[in-house]
Every structure is written in structure tokens, then in C-alpha cells.
Image (cartoon, rainbow, N blue to C red; front, side, top):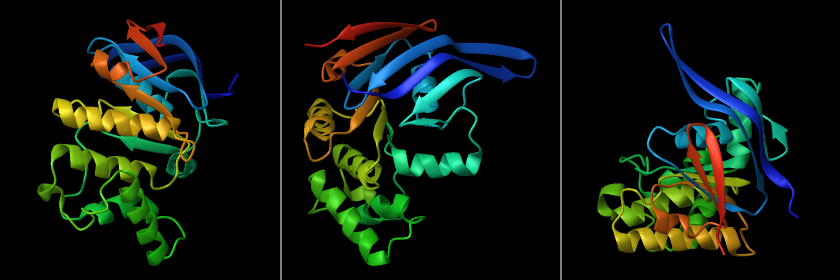
Length: 231
């Protein structure tokens, strides 16, 4: 049995707006094994993206414990948390979040700018990441010169360029046509299963077809989790 890379214990998240309290997650506990490909599903407003953001250290739990990649990040300060994220988390967004004024390889380099690597090392790492996602012939293309599927590949290259422990993806195929979505899911599956990468993946999706790629599906509804294991 693989050790847990994600462990949430009795986690609650409440958003406050003036005097109004909006509970999103209530007493949620879950474990994700190292090397897992997990899909999070549920209706809009069920808290899927909130849960993903808690795991990624982008948002903070109101109560409970969030332990990821061997570290309790629950009460961590902003500076050490940012450093932890840069080492451990690769985030893939639905709308790519590429900078339009930078070409593909420059976008991929961005997470490395705070490292102690030389400019040459950063560029080599970024080029390798683009090769891994099959875009070695698009390195100097601007985002506007790329298709949606190619932009998402650049975004995935940016997510893996630091060799993170965990990939978290929020609706990564939600803005793509069927063919491009299939290509992105194939790529994410390769990053999870190929011995060169072996990335743990947590993916929020509305798409049952996308969720079929995962080893396990967690359905989140009204703060409760129900598990489905894929064959």
C-alpha cells in the first residue's frame, strides 16, 4: 500500500461575507495515496475547487488539518507556504493562464525565475518540459498563435517544469473540443503512469468521460464524499 501523499482530517471551510457565513466543506476527511490519479466530481457549488485549492495550499482551511507531501500546511505562514508550493505543486487551470506577451518557452520558464538556476539551466528545463508535452516545434510561438489544446499543453509544461510532487488540475479539459480534451487526458495519464514521471494527479472535472481516466473518483456533495474505484 502506497503511503498517503494527501491527508485531510476533519477539514471545514467557511467563507464569510460581512456577517454572513457560507459553509462549503464540513468535517471532511480523505486520504490520497502517492501515485494516485484522483478525480473530484460533484454539482456546481459543491466545493470541488475549494477542496483542490486547500490541497494546493492556495486557500486555507477554517478548521481541521491539511497534510500534503509530508508537510502539515494548515497553519503555515505565507512565505514558507509559497516556497512549499513552488517545490511541491504544479497547478493546471481551465483557461490556461498564459501570459500573452511571452512565448511558449518563456511562459514555461516562469516558475523557475525564483530558483537559483542560471538562465541557461532555466531555458533547458523549459525546453525539456515542452518536449515532454509534444510542443518542441512551438517553443517560440506566442499564445495567440496556438490552438486551445496547444495552450493547455504549454500550461501543463509550466506545471511540471519544477518537477513537483503533485499535479492539481481544475477542469483542465473544460474549454477544449473533444479531440484536444482526449489529447490532454492522454498526456495527464502518461504523467501519472510513466515510470519517468509518476506524478500524483488530483483533477476536478464535470465530465464523466474525463473522470474515467482516474483510478478513483470522489463525488463531493453537501460536504460529503462518496468514492468510486475505476477498474
